[in-house]
Image (cartoon, rainbow, N blue to C red; front, side):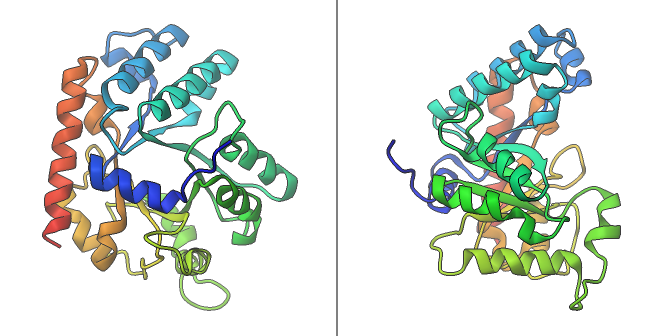
Length: 280
Protein backbone atom coordinates (compact mmCIF):
# COMPACT_ATOMS: atom_id res chain seq x y z
CA UNK A 1 0.00 0.00 0.00
CA UNK A 2 1.44 3.38 -1.05
CA UNK A 3 2.27 5.53 1.99
CA UNK A 4 0.27 8.73 2.33
CA UNK A 5 1.90 12.12 2.42
CA UNK A 6 2.13 13.49 5.97
CA UNK A 7 -1.23 14.72 7.20
CA UNK A 8 -0.14 18.32 7.69
CA UNK A 9 0.93 18.60 4.06
CA UNK A 10 -2.28 17.01 2.81
CA UNK A 11 -4.43 19.27 4.95
CA UNK A 12 -2.55 22.40 3.88
CA UNK A 13 -3.03 21.45 0.21
CA UNK A 14 -6.74 20.71 0.71
CA UNK A 15 -7.38 24.03 2.44
CA UNK A 16 -5.40 25.99 -0.13
CA UNK A 17 -7.17 24.41 -3.09
CA UNK A 18 -10.68 23.76 -1.74
CA UNK A 19 -11.00 26.46 0.89
CA UNK A 20 -10.38 26.42 4.65
CA UNK A 21 -13.60 24.74 5.75
CA UNK A 22 -14.61 21.59 7.60
CA UNK A 23 -18.27 20.57 7.37
CA UNK A 24 -19.68 18.30 10.04
CA UNK A 25 -21.94 15.38 9.19
CA UNK A 26 -24.20 15.39 12.24
CA UNK A 27 -27.39 13.42 11.50
CA UNK A 28 -29.14 14.02 14.80
CA UNK A 29 -32.86 13.41 15.11
CA UNK A 30 -33.97 17.03 14.76
CA UNK A 31 -32.06 17.48 11.48
CA UNK A 32 -33.46 14.26 10.06
CA UNK A 33 -36.94 15.54 10.90
CA UNK A 34 -36.21 18.96 9.39
CA UNK A 35 -35.18 17.19 6.18
CA UNK A 36 -38.45 15.23 6.13
CA UNK A 37 -36.69 11.97 7.00
CA UNK A 38 -37.50 9.32 9.56
CA UNK A 39 -35.25 8.93 12.56
CA UNK A 40 -34.11 5.47 11.51
CA UNK A 41 -31.33 3.84 9.50
CA UNK A 42 -33.01 4.63 6.18
CA UNK A 43 -33.24 8.30 7.13
CA UNK A 44 -29.64 8.23 8.33
CA UNK A 45 -28.48 6.73 5.06
CA UNK A 46 -30.36 9.21 2.87
CA UNK A 47 -29.11 12.16 4.93
CA UNK A 48 -25.51 11.01 4.87
CA UNK A 49 -25.50 10.12 1.19
CA UNK A 50 -26.94 13.53 0.30
CA UNK A 51 -24.25 15.39 2.25
CA UNK A 52 -21.42 13.30 0.85
CA UNK A 53 -22.63 13.56 -2.74
CA UNK A 54 -23.15 17.33 -2.42
CA UNK A 55 -19.90 18.25 -0.68
CA UNK A 56 -17.18 15.60 -0.79
CA UNK A 57 -15.84 16.73 -4.16
CA UNK A 58 -15.44 20.36 -3.07
CA UNK A 59 -14.83 20.91 0.66
CA UNK A 60 -11.46 20.34 2.32
CA UNK A 61 -12.68 18.28 5.26
CA UNK A 62 -15.80 16.34 6.17
CA UNK A 63 -16.27 15.52 9.86
CA UNK A 64 -18.76 12.76 10.63
CA UNK A 65 -19.84 12.64 14.27
CA UNK A 66 -19.51 8.96 15.12
CA UNK A 67 -22.11 8.98 17.90
CA UNK A 68 -24.98 9.78 15.54
CA UNK A 69 -24.15 6.63 13.56
CA UNK A 70 -23.34 4.44 16.55
CA UNK A 71 -26.81 4.99 18.01
CA UNK A 72 -28.23 2.79 15.23
CA UNK A 73 -25.87 -0.09 15.98
CA UNK A 74 -24.15 -2.13 13.29
CA UNK A 75 -26.37 -0.81 10.49
CA UNK A 76 -25.49 2.74 11.44
CA UNK A 77 -21.79 1.91 11.49
CA UNK A 78 -22.16 0.42 8.00
CA UNK A 79 -23.53 3.77 6.80
CA UNK A 80 -20.57 5.51 8.41
CA UNK A 81 -18.06 3.14 6.77
CA UNK A 82 -19.54 3.86 3.35
CA UNK A 83 -19.55 7.61 3.98
CA UNK A 84 -15.89 7.56 4.95
CA UNK A 85 -14.91 5.55 1.91
CA UNK A 86 -16.90 7.65 -0.56
CA UNK A 87 -15.82 10.97 0.95
CA UNK A 88 -12.15 10.09 0.69
CA UNK A 89 -12.62 8.74 -2.85
CA UNK A 90 -14.08 12.13 -3.84
CA UNK A 91 -11.04 13.95 -2.46
CA UNK A 92 -12.25 15.23 0.90
CA UNK A 93 -10.20 14.55 3.99
CA UNK A 94 -12.24 12.74 6.63
CA UNK A 95 -11.91 13.78 10.26
CA UNK A 96 -13.69 11.24 12.45
CA UNK A 97 -15.22 13.08 15.38
CA UNK A 98 -15.03 10.28 17.93
CA UNK A 99 -13.35 12.03 20.89
CA UNK A 100 -11.83 8.80 22.11
CA UNK A 101 -9.69 8.71 25.23
CA UNK A 102 -8.33 5.72 27.15
CA UNK A 103 -5.07 4.07 28.11
CA UNK A 104 -2.74 1.36 26.87
CA UNK A 105 -4.10 -1.35 24.63
CA UNK A 106 -7.58 0.19 24.60
CA UNK A 107 -6.24 3.44 23.20
CA UNK A 108 -4.28 1.34 20.75
CA UNK A 109 -7.46 -0.38 19.61
CA UNK A 110 -9.17 2.97 19.05
CA UNK A 111 -6.16 4.07 17.02
CA UNK A 112 -6.37 0.94 14.88
CA UNK A 113 -10.10 1.41 14.35
CA UNK A 114 -9.73 4.90 12.89
CA UNK A 115 -6.12 5.30 11.78
CA UNK A 116 -5.00 1.90 10.47
CA UNK A 117 -5.12 1.77 6.68
CA UNK A 118 -6.90 -1.57 6.40
CA UNK A 119 -9.67 -0.60 8.84
CA UNK A 120 -13.21 -0.13 7.42
CA UNK A 121 -13.34 3.19 9.31
CA UNK A 122 -9.89 4.40 8.21
CA UNK A 123 -9.98 8.18 8.34
CA UNK A 124 -7.48 10.93 7.68
CA UNK A 125 -7.71 12.11 11.28
CA UNK A 126 -9.58 11.51 14.52
CA UNK A 127 -10.49 13.62 17.56
CA UNK A 128 -9.20 12.43 20.95
CA UNK A 129 -9.38 13.52 24.58
CA UNK A 130 -6.11 14.02 26.52
CA UNK A 131 -7.58 14.27 29.99
CA UNK A 132 -6.30 10.87 31.11
CA UNK A 133 -2.89 12.45 30.60
CA UNK A 134 -1.31 13.39 27.29
CA UNK A 135 0.89 10.31 27.41
CA UNK A 136 -2.21 8.12 27.22
CA UNK A 137 -2.55 9.26 23.58
CA UNK A 138 0.80 7.75 22.55
CA UNK A 139 -0.72 4.76 20.66
CA UNK A 140 -2.86 7.13 18.57
CA UNK A 141 -0.02 9.58 17.99
CA UNK A 142 2.30 6.79 16.83
CA UNK A 143 -0.32 5.16 14.61
CA UNK A 144 -1.13 8.52 13.02
CA UNK A 145 2.48 9.12 12.03
CA UNK A 146 2.78 5.57 10.70
CA UNK A 147 -0.31 5.99 8.52
CA UNK A 148 0.20 9.59 7.43
CA UNK A 149 -2.82 10.69 9.46
CA UNK A 150 -3.64 13.35 12.02
CA UNK A 151 -4.89 13.53 15.59
CA UNK A 152 -6.93 16.47 16.89
CA UNK A 153 -6.62 16.81 20.65
CA UNK A 154 -9.23 18.58 22.77
CA UNK A 155 -7.70 21.73 24.24
CA UNK A 156 -10.20 24.58 24.74
CA UNK A 157 -13.59 23.43 23.56
CA UNK A 158 -16.61 25.56 22.71
CA UNK A 159 -18.92 24.11 25.39
CA UNK A 160 -19.13 26.27 28.55
CA UNK A 161 -18.65 23.27 30.86
CA UNK A 162 -15.19 22.60 29.47
CA UNK A 163 -13.63 25.55 31.29
CA UNK A 164 -13.78 23.92 34.74
CA UNK A 165 -11.26 21.33 33.56
CA UNK A 166 -9.42 23.03 30.71
CA UNK A 167 -8.84 26.34 32.52
CA UNK A 168 -7.80 24.64 35.77
CA UNK A 169 -4.25 25.21 36.94
CA UNK A 170 -1.87 22.40 36.03
CA UNK A 171 0.66 21.01 38.50
CA UNK A 172 3.47 22.91 36.71
CA UNK A 173 1.53 26.16 36.70
CA UNK A 174 -0.47 27.64 33.84
CA UNK A 175 -3.72 26.17 32.61
CA UNK A 176 -4.25 22.51 31.86
CA UNK A 177 -5.18 23.52 28.31
CA UNK A 178 -1.83 25.29 27.86
CA UNK A 179 0.00 22.21 29.14
CA UNK A 180 -1.77 20.11 26.52
CA UNK A 181 -0.95 22.66 23.81
CA UNK A 182 2.70 22.58 24.85
CA UNK A 183 2.71 18.80 24.42
CA UNK A 184 1.19 19.19 20.96
CA UNK A 185 3.86 21.70 19.97
CA UNK A 186 6.54 19.25 21.07
CA UNK A 187 4.99 16.53 18.88
CA UNK A 188 4.96 18.86 15.86
CA UNK A 189 8.51 20.17 16.26
CA UNK A 190 10.29 20.43 12.91
CA UNK A 191 7.24 19.65 10.79
CA UNK A 192 6.55 21.66 7.65
CA UNK A 193 4.05 23.07 6.76
CA UNK A 194 2.12 21.63 9.72
CA UNK A 195 2.58 18.70 12.04
CA UNK A 196 0.12 15.83 12.46
CA UNK A 197 -1.14 16.86 15.90
CA UNK A 198 -3.88 19.46 15.94
CA UNK A 199 -5.82 21.14 18.73
CA UNK A 200 -9.54 21.62 19.12
CA UNK A 201 -10.14 25.24 20.13
CA UNK A 202 -13.61 26.77 20.07
CA UNK A 203 -14.21 29.76 17.83
CA UNK A 204 -16.61 31.11 20.46
CA UNK A 205 -13.91 31.76 23.08
CA UNK A 206 -13.03 35.37 22.31
CA UNK A 207 -9.46 35.80 23.54
CA UNK A 208 -8.29 32.22 24.03
CA UNK A 209 -5.63 33.36 26.52
CA UNK A 210 -3.19 30.61 25.52
CA UNK A 211 -0.33 30.17 23.07
CA UNK A 212 -1.84 28.51 20.00
CA UNK A 213 1.37 28.38 17.96
CA UNK A 214 1.62 24.58 18.05
CA UNK A 215 2.93 24.25 14.47
CA UNK A 216 -0.16 22.19 13.71
CA UNK A 217 -3.78 22.63 12.63
CA UNK A 218 -6.42 24.17 14.89
CA UNK A 219 -9.93 22.77 14.53
CA UNK A 220 -12.36 25.56 15.38
CA UNK A 221 -15.93 24.44 16.10
CA UNK A 222 -18.61 26.95 17.01
CA UNK A 223 -19.13 28.89 13.77
CA UNK A 224 -22.75 29.24 12.74
CA UNK A 225 -25.36 27.85 15.11
CA UNK A 226 -23.15 28.28 18.20
CA UNK A 227 -22.75 31.99 17.53
CA UNK A 228 -19.23 32.53 16.21
CA UNK A 229 -18.62 34.00 12.75
CA UNK A 230 -15.65 33.85 10.37
CA UNK A 231 -14.85 37.44 11.33
CA UNK A 232 -14.14 36.24 14.90
CA UNK A 233 -11.28 33.95 13.84
CA UNK A 234 -8.39 36.48 13.80
CA UNK A 235 -9.31 37.71 17.29
CA UNK A 236 -9.41 34.20 18.75
CA UNK A 237 -6.44 32.67 16.93
CA UNK A 238 -4.15 35.64 16.27
CA UNK A 239 -0.99 34.82 14.35
CA UNK A 240 -1.98 31.13 14.12
CA UNK A 241 -5.14 31.89 12.14
CA UNK A 242 -3.77 30.52 8.85
CA UNK A 243 -3.65 27.06 10.41
CA UNK A 244 -7.27 27.21 11.55
CA UNK A 245 -9.74 24.66 10.17
CA UNK A 246 -13.13 26.27 10.91
CA UNK A 247 -15.87 23.70 11.43
CA UNK A 248 -19.50 24.33 10.52
CA UNK A 249 -22.28 21.78 10.91
CA UNK A 250 -25.82 23.07 11.34
CA UNK A 251 -24.97 26.31 9.54
CA UNK A 252 -24.56 24.26 6.36
CA UNK A 253 -26.76 21.23 7.03
CA UNK A 254 -29.90 23.27 7.69
CA UNK A 255 -29.89 24.17 3.98
CA UNK A 256 -30.58 20.55 3.02
CA UNK A 257 -31.92 18.31 1.70
CA UNK A 258 -31.41 20.33 -1.48
CA UNK A 259 -27.83 19.55 -2.64
CA UNK A 260 -27.54 22.97 -4.25
CA UNK A 261 -28.44 24.62 -0.95
CA UNK A 262 -25.75 22.63 0.85
CA UNK A 263 -23.14 23.58 -1.75
CA UNK A 264 -24.08 27.26 -1.71
CA UNK A 265 -23.92 27.41 2.10
CA UNK A 266 -20.53 25.68 2.19
CA UNK A 267 -19.13 27.95 -0.52
CA UNK A 268 -20.40 31.03 1.30
CA UNK A 269 -18.75 30.03 4.57
CA UNK A 270 -15.49 29.16 2.78
CA UNK A 271 -15.46 32.54 1.04
CA UNK A 272 -16.14 34.42 4.30
CA UNK A 273 -13.35 32.50 6.03
CA UNK A 274 -10.90 33.27 3.21
CA UNK A 275 -11.65 36.97 3.53
CA UNK A 276 -11.30 36.91 7.32
CA UNK A 277 -7.98 35.05 7.23
CA UNK A 278 -6.57 37.20 4.40
CA UNK A 279 -7.33 40.34 6.37
CA UNK A 280 -5.70 39.11 9.57
